[in-house]
Image (cartoon, rainbow, N blue to C red; front, side, top):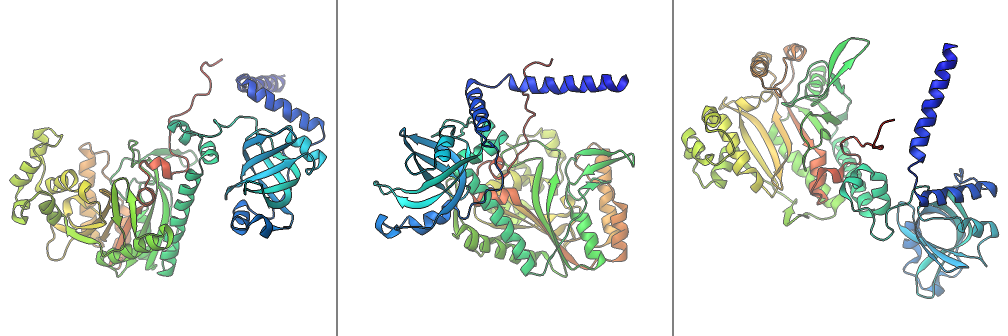
Length: 521
């Protein structure tokens, strides 16, 4: 009896979901559903399978677009498939503009040429449907290239109408929420995201050629560490323990250096529980790599070679355009210490930058309570002066070196001046794109800095890291001198593709939850 009640309850719930969804169907959708029914009644499956194109629209354009009507002559029978984006109907004939993911191309349907069944299916077609056609290539009287469809079939019936035919999807919120529609209507979206894939592939190949080993490390950590950021939390039921989504893979990758791999990298997904902005998404992609017996100077050379290669081989231009700026990726790139950069861009001398009072005068207009500003150490004032007065001016590729030890808990102290670390950050377009340093491999020093972070966390800093005792233990076994770096892939792709929001280079950016129904029943 209980099972029967559960079954009835489940069926009612299922019916409720289906009813609530279908009740919102528009009149246009009802017309399309009626056409789908007519296809089924004619014996044609509106969701066919097993039809394989033997060419692409891109190939047809490359092969025949430059030829005259006479030069094309008789062609092979081509099989193509694509989504219909526009229909020009002339009664007994029509042109269908289609997109197969490589190119837009038109199919010509004619009652005298297309099979009877094919023409009957055309009459049940709507823009947005996916079709399969077979025929030969020709040029129209106006010189337009087309496929003369001898056979035509609706492969997938589209129930929901696409946005207005000629202008595409322009609503920004809908573009990111319904990326699939954005990609259908805006080929430039598909091209930009394809370029992202090509950039990532090139980066991987660059590392493979340099004999780096690609590895995978955990995405759930028992300790939040590897970077200063607020983590996302989750819970493992079986172990009854709190876990943190990965902030950075750094500490695991360095464990691999301890274990004997001298060159490792990971193209990784990281998660930081921070706000959304034009340059930030809580889930993001970066690449981190570690290189035993190298220094941060080697990483600067490596990074410069990587970016000049991407510009040359992927972007096909050493000078790229971002907004109003031309950015030259040819190299060599500018290299400045943080103190030199602050001096240069605030019209100060190095001696003045070394003076705390002068830094306070530079920062008198920043949005910070005077009491809090006065409480900052010289090192933190230097970093703040750099962030507030310098960063946005670093349009051309620039390496900034010599960060204060106080703000670099995982970096190796400089041998000549232990108040600074062997570190750089790389900037383009006024944005930080990469962070690197010669790694700290002294376990005593590392434990001391972890303890400093623990004190900061106890004092209320929710971005401070926990003490990772296992990592200290790993260092006690001995890690060779190592240099490591992280590159923000999303931000790099933004610059390389002239994208002014990170959402344009992420397939599915994080958005607020969508509410499909206005009222709950």
